[in-house]
Length: 279
Length: 281
Image (tube, rainbow over all chains, first blue to last red; front, side, top):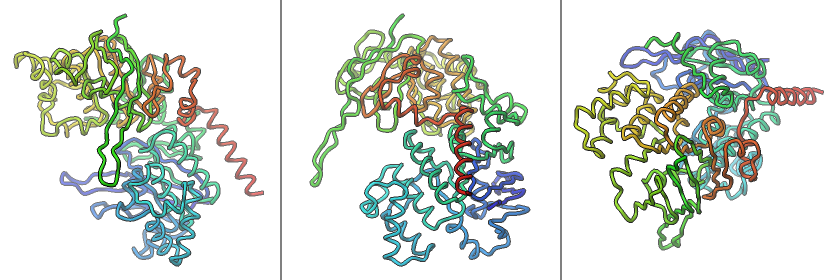
């Protein structure tokens, strides 16, 4: 059963040198309780397509799609007010830079209680209790103390845990994580990925993981969608993708991984790129 | 085999000034590290943020001064705190930084970027400086016509090629590379790693390669030094460290590194399927 369905999504940006197509006819489908990885290099439109679904793009973006539905509700036909009942409650999102995503002027407790009061409708007191519960759930040490901490007093990994706590505070049915571990050390990355998968398994929410890292894909995804320059190159379950990649770009990307090196030079994606790029 | 750089018990302390409410304290960023790198070889220094790997890189690159220990470049002890760095020494050791967007002056044309090291450190005449900069552009895989372009006209991978070209202008024997590919896309990363391998062969360069990415290190290094909180917790040849990591921290680092092994994916997928079936039952 699909929870989010996007068909033929195109996002164009008006620039001084004409319009630029960031996403070019992409389909995205994620099922209930599924982990979908959207993988691509910079410029593949992986973030932009999800920001478009969230309605978070600036006014300069022209978004068109044949279909954009969340759990049967048509996101395209909604008023902004109706959309906000879903975005931030039923669909939530976390970003790459956890420290920059939090407001430096307010404590972690203030920020998560704000979510709980306005989006989950809890009282001040209930919000505090639930915040402690959530901080416990995401594995923050000393949850009560952390409520009074400002973002600069926490490490990157701790800040990302706070972001995740805020994102699951409303019991969303879909969490979109945009490069959630890219700014973190590898041992912290493992903890955060394990946490996201544990929460996904506990709550049964769907998870879309946007990443450029094939290792992260291999260790988290059920299904994978490979994008390149705003187009979908391949979609497959995770095992088929790594075992038997169909698309030349996917194959090139996998062979460029240093751990797959066989000779003393790495195969590059250049041969694939040559046919794509005329400049 | 000639040793290009040797560190003996290198220390680096940072003193943090106190205030009314806070006493002064000393941070030991590098706590006595020894290593050698021979011509044509690569030493990879691995660690996470705060491990002191970049501090050590800056000391080896003769940018920062060690608080203790000895640094020898081609057998000659050097202490930039005591004596001024000679042009000759500066020519021997060059550095490439992580972020090619930050390490190139946006108002300087590429040609000037490449000619500047010659202008500052040698008496090469202008016409020869120009010729050598053009040659170097070609050597790192860029057309010589890009000489008059500005950094913003290049992609991240191209900028990193320019930064590498700049580092090579003085014919150094040692290149210190601080996370040179971690800001780059996978496909571009492979190209830059290949370029580094080509250049190392051609000029018989020694590399000190700072990285947090074990798959890159495994591909490029001859020797590996694992740092944690300023200490070298593990040191050895690549084969030895990867085949049989001794220190718990090294093992933790290896275990945390995501792998793309098909059998591992198969096992994980099976576990997820079993869990789903159990939830339904």
